[in-house]
Length: 295
Image 1: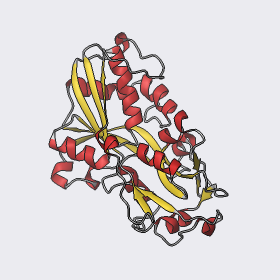
Image 2 (image 1 turned 180 degrees about the vertical axis):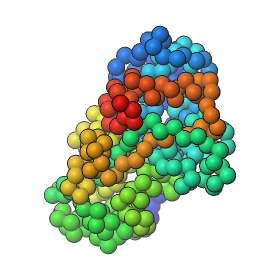
Image 3 (image 1 turned 45 degrees about the horizontal axis):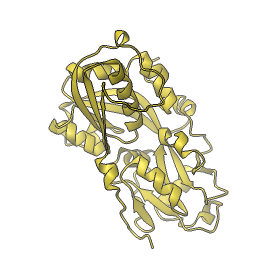
């Protein structure tokens, strides 16, 4: 039985991508802009938080430091709640979050933070490949599954196979967004479940756990390394695409926030400006499966 098992990957929790101008990233992203087109500021900063936003921040940081000698950007995950707590405490320079700060922090701490919305992001419901015959879930069906009313895939037109929910910790912005937009605030079932600590860990678990389902960011689903490993589902008959996210027909989406403790300066300000530049908004963001916030 998988009853209530919490399977946390310590490596995923501790994973930190350290980027500096002298490092070799091995990135497959397009060539970084030259330093002449970027406001280069020397120094070292750390971002932490949302794993849904992490692929975008990581790729943008790689491009920035490739163009700017003397800049180092440490990109960490940990979940939205962790990122918000760390930025409120001043232990990192940028806290990445899928949700508003006041949904995770007490008012005095949240009020100290400055919100920088840098992208639109979407999530897709996914299943293990053995869940055949299910290509769409209505909001009502998804709620029945996640609250334990339906515990076998045959209840929604799939095979006679027990449903295994892959949950995220309470600090997760992905979990909070899904609960708000799809489950209408209802609590998830506590029976046949696993808990994973990041979008990446969830993606791996779905691919290896029979009958499993969860929610992951578009960036993880469209990653070539995950091609063919998962089934992606429509929500209420709407395809999970950036186009549908941008036009408002696909509802499982939210702003991507980068929070600072007060107004940013130095390398922090320069990197946030870079996140809003055409190189990121017009090129990198759509390439990674996000939506721009400036046109």
